[in-house]
Image 1 (cartoon, rainbow, N blue to C red):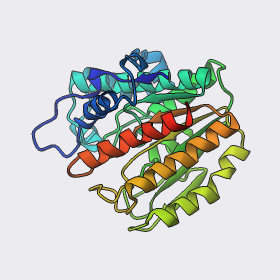
Image 2: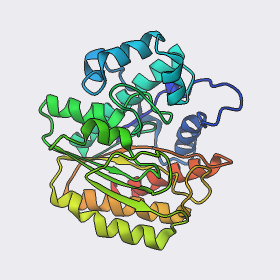
Image 3: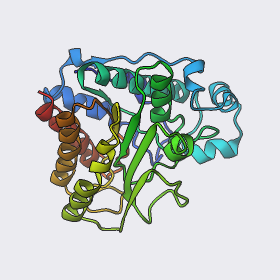
Length: 298
């Protein structure tokens, strides 16, 4: 299995910043320490070109972020201070998503230890998302003739408004989002299927709804599934407002990955959100996703 990771995924932030940037490094270290992944399975992503990035983003936005000339209001909406390191990190994360998807098409499964940046629009970023990795990946694969149809299964607790903004009108893309009804973003852009959950939703209700709604995705017969395996539905998450247990999240992953495997549909993973305090709860959940991956894709 190929899983993409770069030391550039972690960049310095001001002290006290609420985004837990260190989680990417911690996940990699845990996966290796527990031998869930071997060092030879980790691969450095290639940085995508401007031509690839502007499949999903306007040239003005890409160039402005590349050279740091975007206005303060635009940067504030992203929620991360601009730096050359953040620009490189954002490119590397998209590169990992592209590599993961290509690996999935070749072997059935691929992973990226970052990504899931589903709040990025074509003209701007928001919600800690600079560039939209899934949008770039899908448009890149379609343009190269590697796929005809793609499905996004977005189980981050926050609705993927950027995904729907960029890809929602594309007839070759199916977007499934299961998220907190009252959570960020305030204005939600409709997906193909949206499942909105009340605050405090627990394992049984969540898993029942997931099993009920998933078949529609596979009946559509996608060539690849991009799975946003966000761990912020976890009850310990500071931004989640749902109440899933660690075991419930693992069962969620089993349901999705078993469906993909049994139907022969390649699946590419992104980490998605995780904001527990302490961050160890989120790291544990990310690691558990890869336990399930190894359990199913032996």
